[in-house]
Image 1 (cartoon, one colour):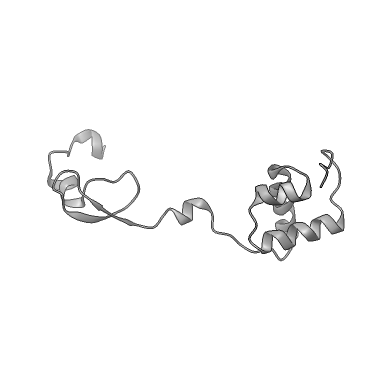
Image 2: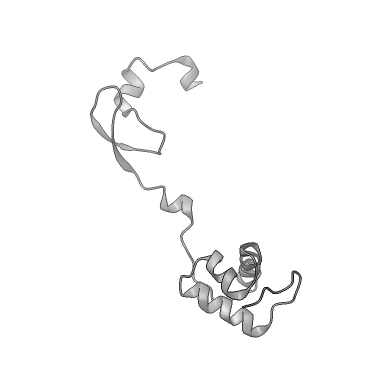
Length: 107
């Protein structure tokens, strides 16, 4: 499809096609290519449609997908623990009782 000039109003057909592709799980960059627009244009139109109450499928955002706890091995004692976030590499015991405690850490 040819690229649609910036600022061109969305036709009913293009809007319906956008909604069909979005609800089918197609990523925004692919929808943009199919409709001849930019990813930002697609996301802006989706935001406007949501505010208008259009029946759009909800998708999980990246931060929610990455928020699951991972099993990690403590870098100090070697014991496995459920990590709170991707930068958490010390188990709770070593954080409280280990040599890593400092007034700077807990300030």
